[in-house]
Image 1 (tube, protein in one colour):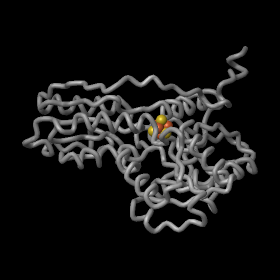
Image 2 (image 1 turned 180 degrees about the vertical axis):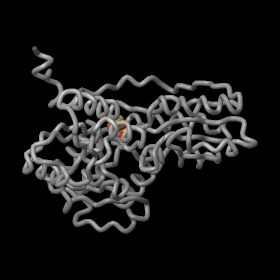
Image 3 (image 1 turned 120 degrees about the vertical axis):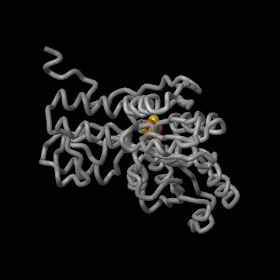
Length: 314
Ligand code: SF4
C-alpha cells in the first residue's frame, strides 16, 4: 500500500489560536472555564478539554454569573454577546479573525441598506452567528436552486458573502448563478472561503486522481472535513470520514493500493499519525508526504489574554 499524505492538512491558524486561548484560560483562571458550543468541531479536541475541566454549553443560562466564558472559533451572534454582558460573564473572544471579517462585512452592508445573501449551511455555528448580525437583512442560500427562489426587495442593493469553510467549487457555482440573476450584485474584495479551506481542498484535488481510496480525518460536524470527503468522493475514490483510528475497518482497503489521507482544519495531527501507523502496521504501507504549500498564517491571541496575568507580572 502507498499512503499519499496530503499537506496542508489539519489545524489552521484559527483553530490553533482557539485551542491556545482555551489552554491559557485554564492556566490563568483555573477550571471550570466555560465555552459556548464546541471550541472547534472535533470530538478529540472537545473530549481532551472536558477531561481538563472545561464545560461546553449551548445556553448561557447554564453558566454561573461572573464565570469565564470563551467564544469558540466559529463566533457568536450579537444576541449571545448581549446576554453574556447581562450575566456579567468574563468573556474571552476566540472567534477566528476570518470569521469576524464576515461578521463585520454583514453588519456594514446591512447598515448601508443592502440585502446580504449569505452562502452557507443552515444551522452551522458560523452561519447562525453571522445571520444574527442583521436577521432582517440577511438571506441564506445553500444551493443554486435557492438562488432561483430568492426574493429580494431591491436587486440593485445586493451583496453576497460566504461561510469560510465552503467547497470552493460549490461557492463559485452559486456565485455564478447569483451574478447571472442579479448582475449588479457585489461581493467581498477577497474571497471569504478562508485560505486554510482552500489549501486543503487544492491539496486533495491534486492527489485524488492518483488514489483509489481516501481517509479524511475529522468529525462529522466539521464543515471543512465534510467538504474534503465530498471532494474525494467526487474524484471517484472510496472515501471515509473518520474521527480516528478506532473507526478504521481494515476490510475497507481490500483491493485498494493507494490511499489518500488528509485531515480537516480541526483534526489533531497526532490522531492523523495514529491512522497512518495503523495502516503501516497492517499493510506495510509506504508513506509519501505531498505538501502543496507551507502555511505561515498566525493569529494573535484574543485581547483578553494578551496581557500577562498578575502572577506572570510578579
Ligand atoms: S477554517 Fe478558516 S475560518 Fe475556520 S478557524 Fe480555520 S482559518 Fe479560521
